[in-house]
Amino acid sequence: MAKTKLTPELQNDFCEAIENGDSILGACGYVGISEQTYYNWINRAEEAKSRTKFVKFKEAVDKAKAKALHNFEQVITRASMEQWQAAAWMLERRHPNLYGKREKIEAEVEHKGLTGLADAIQLSKDKHRREDEAD
Image (cartoon, rainbow, N blue to C red; front, side):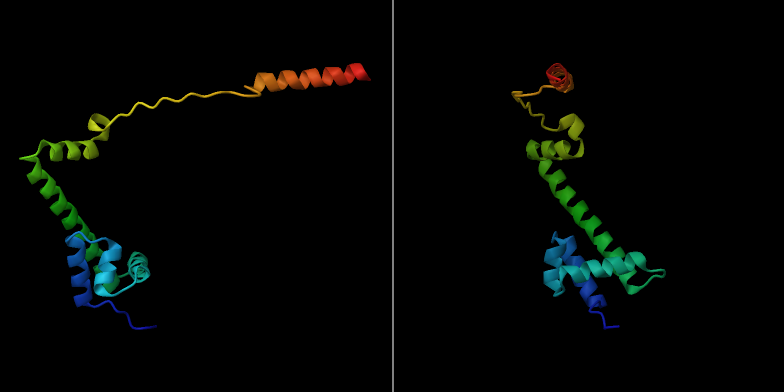
């Protein structure tokens, strides 16, 4: 089996990029691996039966994602102290049923031809009656 590029240094750099808000693709580029390599490592972690370096990598990445989420939420929370729009934005997304935007959509539908099963049945009956009369 080929030697893996996964080292403690690469893992730390990758997780730092994620914590700072990079996407998976961006973090992969930052540490010099392909996105496919990242997903291969995650798959190996999920299939592992013991706590391999891939499992440790996945756990570290999950923790970095959680930290990034926490950091972004803190930025919005701090901003909401001075700008109500930040609070409104957060409410819309966290509680869309209560605070989400509701848009009224109007549509006009025009029916052409058969408008239902009843019309189709009637046409079929009429056709058969004409055929019977022609016989």
